[in-house]
Image 1 (tube, rainbow, N blue to C red):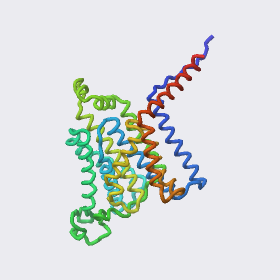
Image 2 (image 1 turned 180 degrees about the vertical axis):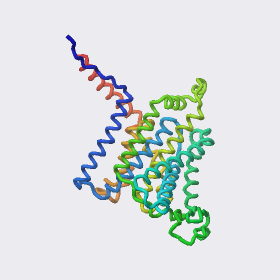
Image 3 (image 1 turned 45 degrees about the vertical axis):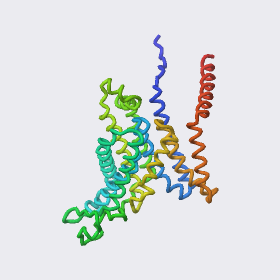
Image 4 (image 1 turned 90 degrees about the horizontal axis):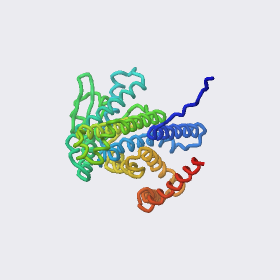
Length: 364
């Protein structure tokens, strides 16, 4: 007599962890959609939904460079800036050249353009700077971000029937009769970018970034990248092409930052390269997300990016006068909890006790 036996499916630890990460993102999206539909979320918090997705993508992508590759980069805001302006420029140009193009297709192509140019800049910058290490690499990448921001503030660019007009002095040097076709207007940036971003698209792009990064981490290339992080000399001795894998991680990280920039640009009516959105403070803020969540911990980067973005606005309703002081105190407490040796030892002791109880129950 044949008997049907239930086969136990063995799921690897990495796959289980990835599924949990995807599940957290999808569950958070579903809960937020329900709260929005029930009008339980303020307009201010609704306005933060797309920026949260932007910051999550930036944190996950920077963790690829800082946590997985082991290189300290402070130029992530620069790559975001490249993606934002190239994507916004493309969308604005398409509005003039192909006004009948569907918005979804236009935004998809803008994402590809932004990712391509940001990745290309990451590749070009990575070739010389990845020879440096530590503080030197951080300073050079920080300078790159500032150069990009300041160049865009000097750029005037328009398109008409005579072709492309570019100037680094003023809009008058473009010699264009129709000022409405000036797309990049120096420090005034780009105005009139179509508002194609929304929370759903942001979550889809977050999931896309997670798929790229997590698959890379658990692939053969990812193991090679982590081998370089742990010991460059040992990696070279076993035949790993260090330059190739460093550039791969750096370019992928830059491309994802470009995607975040496109999402950010299409959520604004006016895009300008200001210090608050593309300056070194933004790069430091993204690095704080990574360090607070745990270097190399992708799920931690997601949680820290969400918490640190929402926390100032939550505090605004309770202590508006001293909310940034309380924010700083909470940030310090979270850093100590994550990285202080005494706290780490305490967490390990709790984890050991829980595992021992779990093993005892399984043995019974």
